[in-house]
Image (cartoon, rainbow, N blue to C red; front, side):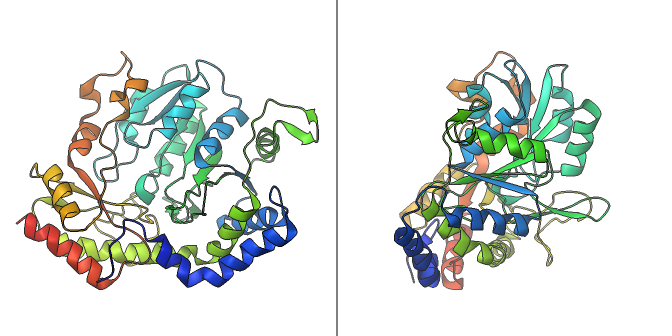
Length: 387
């Protein structure tokens, strides 16, 4: 059996080696390493794929979030609500901009922001909501948009883990994750569903004025060289990374399908184990799925995350490592408990779901190159341990 990887980028690369190598060589031949033609070409390709008016590439996903908030003109002290159960970058940029992060609990099934907790957190100082499409599943955007409209709030989608996912509204309309709110952001970190071979990110919007502002911010506030119209940063996607992404973008839907197939295999193998809760693809009430349906497109499984209910999560983590099966705990500490983000406003009883998840979740290998032999070995090792 081939060695199991948490993410097998080497095997993926071998299948697209010629195309990727040609893209990189094109950059080397032209020596246009910054803002070269491949950056523009990738931007246009991604705009078409997402059906969004503006894609603004940048240096990484964290920058993308920060720049989106800068572009919206949020001011010091403005409250920004986001999920407690996610990677720290989401709240990090809020704090860096001297905004006030407001963390709320998540839904027990989807791990995305809890709608009732969101409603309770709104105050006169609230200016924005940052739904995180965690692990590849789109948050309940019908409800979030309704709340935002009622309270005149911005919606900034953290789409770092869900590029390629679709959201089906209650009226049947579909839209790509990251293009639904006022602005969306993503990361092209190598392990993402659409990943480059270094750092990279992008910002999406259909708002012409906002796009114009953001294009200046990413380039030191310049629209004309050496004329600085807005306060900006230096955050650009380099040409080599754009070349890699341009080569991989046509394969993204296939990559997402491969991940869903692996997730279905896992779910089927664990279906009758009382000690395991498997992930669902349940983004809204239009498709009230308790599993991963045949037409699933709301979840792209950036991570495949189980909940272990018998108190043996940590033992399983060690057992898998001992058997050559990489795994990870995303996330071991709630954001409201992190030293950098503790706040007297937070009460433990307000985070029952998050506080349970940090004790029970475990993420298994998930990538495009998993084969049946590997999946069988992984699932048998887990089910044998959790009998």
